[in-house]
Length: 66
Image 1: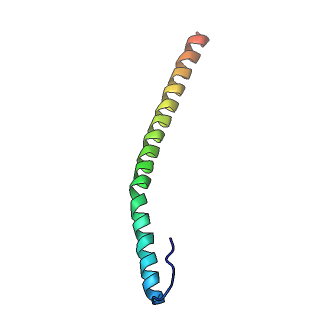
Image 2 (image 1 turned 180 degrees about the horizontal axis):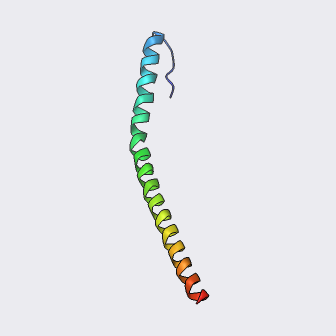
């Protein structure tokens, strides 16, 4: 994010650049929140698959042992 510094006080340029950075960061916030939500759902599926896999493995092991 750049603004050419010509015939303006430097502080005005800094303020404009700061506003542009803040606006850019505010636009990306929902994407970060969506990613966090998607990651938490993925973690739930992974843990559920792990529990189901262990349960099925133990059940098959018991059946084979008999």
